[in-house]
Image 1 (cartoon, rainbow, N blue to C red):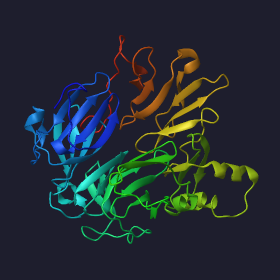
Image 2: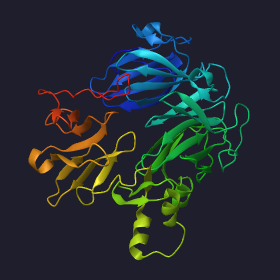
Image 3: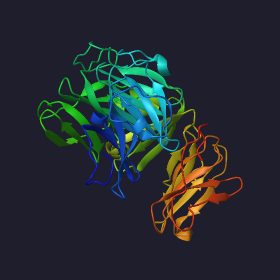
Image 4: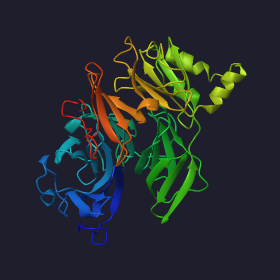
Length: 436
């Protein structure tokens, strides 16, 4: 039932995802996807008629005329709400702007098969997590973790041997095993996927980029863990069978040796960050694996380097970009890349504490001062650029209302800022992949 918070009703809601002022709900028992407007308190239905049935691709003219089959997992990215449909063993996407359903991957058969889009197969997908252009899937009955590339819809198995081939082994991906994973969550400050291994009653982690599956130590065995949330250096676990929750499970420390071991020997740029996201160091390498690994190989190092290493909470790398951060426009700059890994923004505080924001069109281009907070009195944070690099996108503070996304064209120097009178400039991905 839709309506205000006092009138609306749900039946076995299984997943939540927050985006701006809306909370999206996988209302599994009602075979529907619902939305709660956090400003008005109104609950409405995006799609689902209350009965299990086969979804149909295309526009959703009437939400109640669409059938879903046990939607149980949700994730949101680029104005698309991704749905794990446990009842029909497929992954769907609901386009929020277009109000349409798209069948992304899975044949509908209960199986574990890699491949492109509809050629792939899942076995009761139950939870989702998304970062950049990768959708991670907890395939419960397959006792596996899968990855769906949102550009091209290619499905790959990261860990797991398939339906009925479950187990309880840590280690390399080819040998590691899970049993009925029901929840996953991405660490906000490390390339780490947390897994609620429900069948084994364990909390597991998978280090992304080729890392191993690891069991995290807990004071006791978990009872049906089916929900996870990660943030502020802790993990929250919903134990369904114990009708309880376990909180403040510490996140594991950064493992520099494991991180370096899975890097390539290509040239590139590496960056080190502290727990508060402070940029500790930026370096260039002829071979990333060798250079990054040298920090963690146990050889003698001076006190300054040891102090820096002790503060590392996460690292990232960009291959083939050895000159990407050369000629930085300001000392101690925090760099931001576009989706192709090209460094385009540099942002740093100056002596009076205000921020300067610089932009460049490419690695051989000059830095341009885009915004000086001391002059504009308006803080702006880079949020990306268009696929062709022509437009920069900035999130800026407004005097009234929410922060808004504006665009800037470095060639024409044209800026499109929030309209007077409130309301954020729309920021969404068009069908051709270019941000508008």
